[in-house]
Image (cartoon, rainbow, N blue to C red; front, top):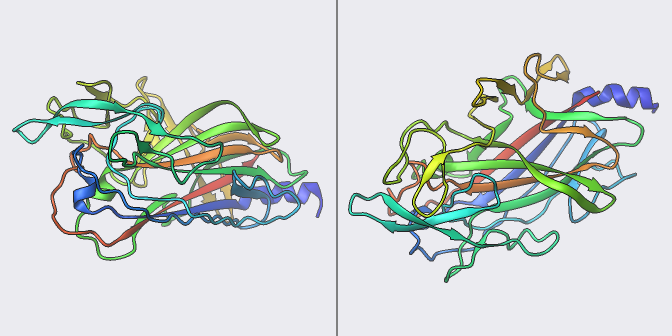
Length: 322
């Protein structure tokens, strides 16, 4: 196949990442720091494309050049306790609750992010007993040789959302999806080594957050813990539901979703914002973080029953050639 034909095919490339993790019992997903229940689960990651131009592999395996294989699977996952962050670097957990049932102070927690490609232990609090702040999965996205460069967006395909959260069984509570966050970061790759800074590109939530959270001085909307006593509005780009447009503090809109026109995906006509730009044969690192935002008003213990469901997060990405 000629390079010209391969480049044309890049317009119809789509990746889907399927992430499943064991749902937390209600006693586990509360914001309470005294909670000590952490049990291992599993995360299944898979990716598929309409053709073999845009590829994905686990970061540990590295780009599978010459293989044209776009399916990856790995066991990454565990139960997670609520946490709060604005940058995926600094994390907080609740410390003291008042008689009003709201949080009045927080503690910054150190998380175990050891190992070059260590995903099975990431997000572990160092307080005793250990618990998890988040789930992290690591990938490399790249193109087939001679196809040039592409920009990567979320893929909005008619009635199929670009990001979906589904439960494996009947759920007893909507706490998990309503307080869930899915963060996507991008980092450059040189050979097999990460270079430069890991950049938080976008955070997704199944539901918009408009009410006041469970902080004693709660404010409306998307919030995070700033320090031991304060919360504030998040500064990261964020979208929710099937709305993929984020309006920043300067009232500028950013559209992260490519739309399907017939059999091809096209970049947003207005205010296009990429998930990753200039992806080529060498590839870029993409990491996906999942956590339960503790400042959400839904992130409370409102059920005493075990939730038996496994939640799957599917992220669909479209590559558009340049």
